Amino acid sequence: MSKFNTNLVHGIPCKENKTGAVNPPIYTSTTYAYPNAESAVRWDYARSGNPTREFLENQVARLENGDRGFAFSSGMAAIHAVLSIFSPGDHVVIGDQIYGGTFRLFNQFFKRWNIEFTAVDTRDSAAVKTAIKPNTKAIYFEPITNPLLHVTSVRAIAEIAQQNNLLVIVDNTFLTPYLQQPLNLGADIVIHSATKYLGGHSDVIAGIVVTKSKKLSDKLYFSQNAIGGILSPEDSNLIRRGIQTLSVRLDRQLLNTQKIVVFLQKRNDIKKINYPGIVGTPEHDVAKNECKDFGAVLSFEVQNINVIKFVNNLKLFQLAVSLGAVESLAELPAKMSHAELSAKELLACGISPNLVRLAIGIEDADDLIVDLEQALNAAK
Ligand SMILES: Cc1ncc(COP(=O)(O)O)c(C=O)c1O
Image (cartoon, rainbow, N blue to C red; front, side, top):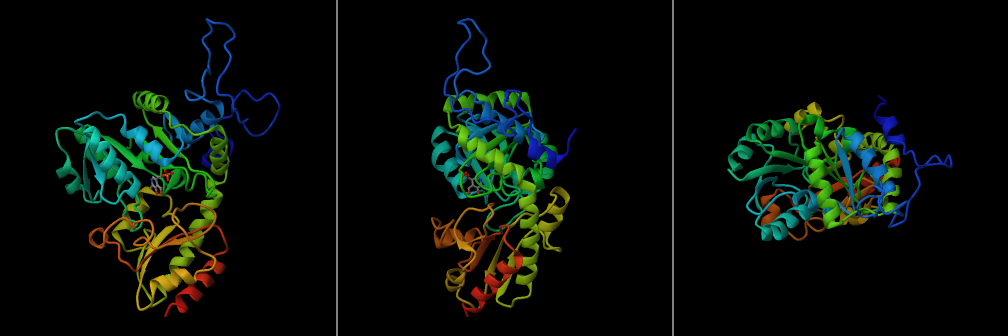
């Protein structure tokens, strides 16, 4: 059995390449000819299956140690397909700090189809247990949340789910299979916004689902083919290519993040740093048991400086939402990613107007630190 980095680079080689090309071909055909009318063909219509997409789907399924992978045109399309396996009357317990787009899909779309949701702090096992009802079918959460970096134990949730015969659905966008493989910790379905670390270059929107069992794979395949939110062959190739460098990119991003945390810890204009790599926090204890490392996203509150001036003064960090790509980004959750929440709602979920979130890229850490330093000093 080859190891993780080898699997990143090679995937599961397809046998259809007759030219010696080292990369799998991009098949653009939407339809495939039958040798004769009674043939049982492997490929017929590209929504139902495409060799370029399938290469990517197999590549990620292997990295997550799952039964089967499914590639979608966005992370949201992937989440939609997963939730579509439930029926009216079903109830799902969800993390209270899941991605806002996911929350909107659940509460403004699936609720209309009579699927019920209860949001809880999934770090609190007792709260999760209390939220379970006779019609509960699944627990859906993000092991590391945005922008406050709350860490939930996949093992703890899986144990509760097993006792109650529930599915465990994990959005693993922040950690990627390089840092955590939720299926190995007891999850049943893993989801990625492949737009982030898997793609890694801020140039393609994509989503991935990996299932643990054949039964779930059959359900997901039905959703993917019936709803049709598939990833194009060209974008499948971009995500495949991004995945080849996932670990080398992340190794640099993780190192840069550690150096930036050390820099921030020394500043008296930084009040509170949210990063599970910081020893002595409950988040750290959970993350160190279940993750290879702590990710390359952090957030912090500033004090005694003007936060707007600070982010506007950044020169190397670009002021933008999203994360996971080669370039470093900064954002103000209260004004950008979470702008649709009222001041009261922001307060309720712990997002202060002074909270800044950084997604660290692969530049030289020294340059990133110089940029943060000059922007902080100029915001006094
Ligand atoms: C954790 C998480 N899940 C899902 C999504 C949605 O993915 P996409 O934007 O690819 O549709 C995002 C997007 O930011 C995200 O951060």
